[in-house]
Length: 145
Image (cartoon, rainbow, N blue to C red; front, side):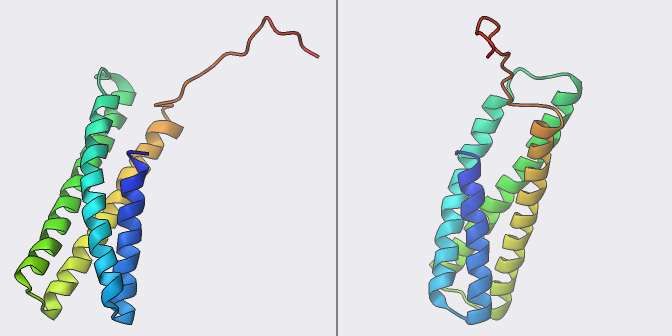
């Protein structure tokens, strides 16, 4: 939940930003801003929890895949923070120009692209390397019917 909730917040925030762009709705722009803020805070928690989950794995193919995922997650984290600070600064200083809106949308789009890349690398960890999977053998003492 710590990992996927910020992803959902940021993706829906970007969708709200796109809706606001096409329909010029202030409501969707505000929704996008608040989802971005919540998603950025959640991304911090997700990055920290991911670091704890990867502790102790320092060699081998799994370590390389974890390192790639961690690097992608760090880029995503910084993009989320930068995008949130940028949007908050525009709101705080009440500086609204057409170019500032487009810079915000491009930052948000880069953030979504980074989320997708990070998710891809996380999927490789699970589906190619079996990270986080708990294998359980069947009970041999049970009768087979």
